Image (cartoon, rainbow over the protein chains, first blue to last red):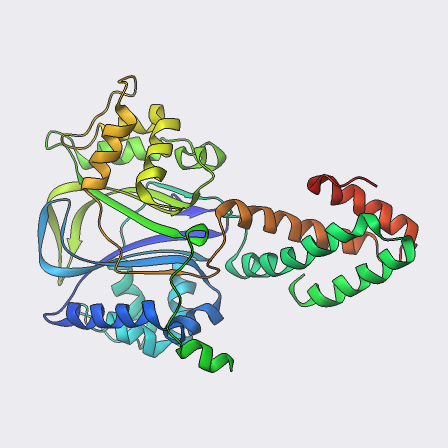
Length: 179
Length: 197
């Protein structure tokens, strides 16, 4: 499928908004840019590499008749799993953004929400990820390990065998949770 | 303390850590059918041969044709559009210039789908003209989210490779004698840093 690269899936949604909801979205997004606690639960889920939202009135010069939320995401696993994870783990975050969509069916049953979301999806014909073979969790773990490994690697050539072995054991102890 | 940190306004990101979400939405030529454009995009080389792979600044990239909008029912847009979108290190103009300079041969036919876009990669100013065209059709991101901010695509790629290498090394050398362990480690990791024994 063109919207998959390695273990990463891309989705593009264009969702028409009910009157007035775009104003709320602008306020919410401005707050999200400023305060990390709003997006912290997303980070804890560790499921999305990158995503972005735009508020648009037209696409390429075509008036849409509604203000729309244009959304792109790059995430692990399939669209069904993506929806399920967020509906179960972050229902209020989902509602805060998507509840203003035209014909929004509510989050439960999640199959209805998934259908609504799928209906607004657009097929991607070409998709690329520079590190698409790694999940979001693996990337976060690798970056933590890499910092510690860099430090040990710099010291390693100057340690004798016993000091090296002790340092190596410490390294593995430190990075063990992320290996 | 960690909770309080989340309430503090964020500092402005440093230039080194800047990641840009770039989305351009350009109208297709009116004489072109959307499916013809879709077939062209689907025929582009993928993976390490993707046009987006020509620059190490690309994290993710996508191209797609949109010609319908779903509201209470699905209806056609006034005209089909090309979405060319990427999450990239640094600023959008220099990224596009780099991309179009290096992948002009692959991307010129894609630009050629769009109304009024430059499409001759042999033209001396193709990359600049195509960059100007795409920036004129840019859609600003209102919010963007990055799970592990502050790292370039190259840094992430390197970290993932080293993470996997260390995991494999740790398994392979469980219980090894210190001298053998040190020698194997330096062989596996130190050459990358240009360290000598």
